Image 1 (cartoon, rainbow, N blue to C red):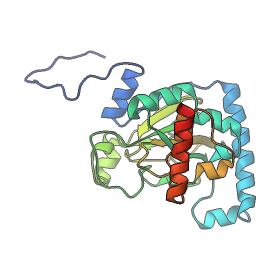
Image 2: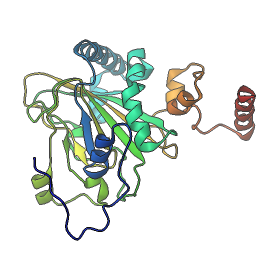
Image 3: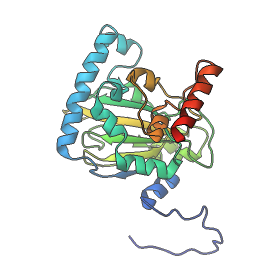
Image 4: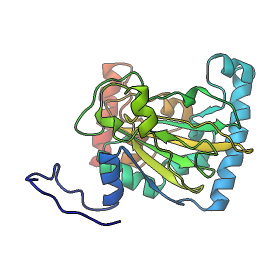
Length: 276
């Protein structure tokens, strides 16, 4: 594709993005999304798919069956997989994924949620509706507050119901008109094992799966610590905080509200003792 210069442009906008994954980060800043193709190998993808199905069956049992999930528009959503499987903890802390997220958001990052999405053939689901991963928000800001990382466990395209994006919508407060939506929506075409990173304020939706196979994915939302987790991940893990202070913050141990002042102070005393 040819490149062109500028005319009458005296300010190129924000300072140029440099460092690791600079091109991807600029795509996220301007379009609202970008991707790293084929980050995970086929064997890893197959294993994660099998584990997802096992966890979904277990979560259905927890609430008395899939019909209960369907009644609350939560069927085929597998929530907080990392609390059920260390393989999904490893996925949430994948070094490349975290490198991109930390480059965009900085070092103070918390995992807000990790959800599996099962998109079955011809079935329109709740995520097929346009939404932001920070729901109910109709404002924009100059810096991202949260970044989503969608791991594709199948090929993503218009046939398999790959995620559809509205480019640039993270910069617009209101949901646009249907005419603009129909003209502007884009479905990235990516092989399985790819990861789509996007500003969590970008409008997007799941596509309708017109293939003859199930399309699975795993979405992560990483945010700055002023945002709350979807579920209390430390409580779900039900284990001692990790030794790594950064990982403590990432999983929410550091940022979750404490029950009272004395507990808050005891935590700070313990931190000071470790540093000493």
